[in-house]
Image (cartoon, rainbow, N blue to C red; front, side):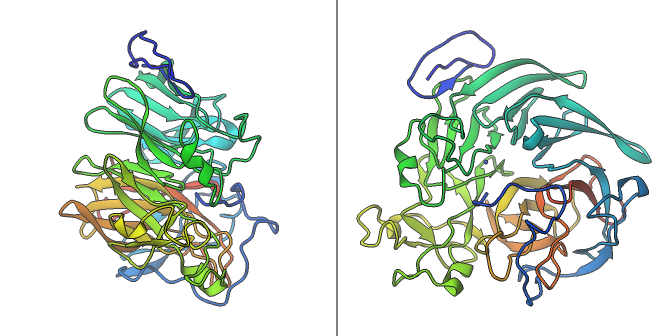
Length: 440
């Protein structure tokens, strides 16, 4: 591994990972629905999360010049009473989002290797431009002052953000695993990576597992299924949390703690060792966890169970049936959860921007299931922040899935903007929505 702080030329080499100075096993997203990727039909309505209240169906406003499929016909969203929702921009396969210091919204597009910049214009559509191009599946983005970190599939880069441009690129971490890694030979289900910067300047990034229950990931170099940490000023990247199957959501909470939203495994056997559809539909819940040094989230030997809050771990009957691989009962419980196969992707925190009861909490883009019967519905979820932890899941934006299981959108991320609105990316509809509370 080669290490140096972002601002100097010190170089140190430690085998495998080079440091200088992101879902479930689902098919790649499409920018619009097609017969081949439509979810299976269901006769059960998509219900909001149990803690949700005062939601109403509202027509999504679509400007004429943005009314391409699947937004070329009327769509309704389920949002808090008195709020409005409109299509703000169209970006095919839009993924994660981050605000720049000068008030523009950056959207990553892994499929095209771009970071797209949306500059708000008063009373008009945002100006759309390309901030960065030619990257390897860029996904997560994070600012530390005027420094922009971008997570590519095989490295983390740092840029100076100045005068609306990203300049002075330097590679902060390289040698990360992706489908081109020689030992993986193209078999890598979770190549997309996310990045966050702690209040002390430490940089955190995710490395997803290669597959559903690929236990060899834990012994790889660098280890996969981890959240990695680089100390302030640079240094070796070390595992901060392990057993994190796919921690695509990665963000800093109001108290400075690091949280991750995790896509847990599919097709888990029941306690008798049988793979039963009814059991698989509800197990294991997806995790929303506070990370501390050395936190262990169990994968692939232990799975969270129960919920919605303070979930204990139980043995995975396909990898740890006798408990010899890991003592699941000894693991600290997971703070919060979502339904099994919900596929949480983007995670952000908001504080002092939105009205009550959304004034402080976490926003999670729920992509929705790809292989569950009936399908788990996509939505934007809100988890209220209180006393250093998160309350139960609430639906902030729903209505993307019809009663028959068909969908017109799949949220990826939601971030609050400097104007007091919530901006939601959708890689299925290829859109960025603007969700506006009353009086904004």
